[in-house]
Length: 255
Image (cartoon, rainbow, N blue to C red; front, side):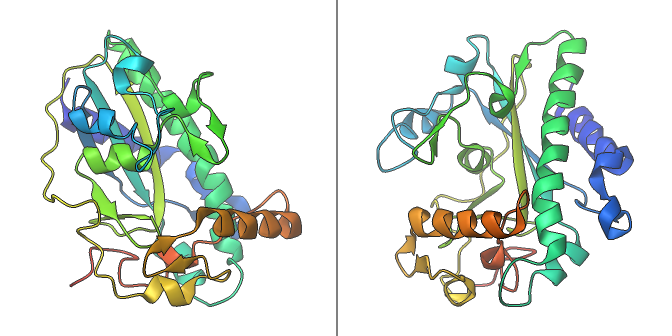
């Protein structure tokens, strides 16, 4: 099995699954064709994520999740144009974005599960950390960061808002699966963790609770705002203003 087989499996699932459509929005599609990358399970950057200045000492390496790990498959699911366009208006998150955030993550969970089953059926071990019972988030810090795994897998770098900027932009969701399938790692076309960010400051002006500055994003301010949105629109929550109406919405911005 090669990366092309996995890429085709994910693309076919996105195209065929009814979970990739929101009935309340007239059957609107949530995600377009994904980006897929691979990181070596032994990449030293996974160990560096344990630093306090990175994700933290609670972060588990691929081989701590699965001793036979050879590769980490990471994908980025870009939101469709309609969802992104609706959320460009300033203010609270658009209805389309809220559905994309919630139903979109339900779809993402199903994709994680299906990819694990696909690999296991082919004779390999596989685990999706975000779906595993060992996955934890304590004080808003998790023991597996899919965005950082995406960085290591060559899919993109971070922005001031701490979104992941990919070739398809920053408006989307990330998923990952660790596997014993030996796959060649994707080449990283960058060296710096924020190399694709142009530092234009557009996300600073877009942020409703003013959580973003030239120094980055205050996660506590951002999370507190999301809690207030959830209290208003429960069970829906989200924002995404820093990922829409900005130069990195749908691609890598020019410097």
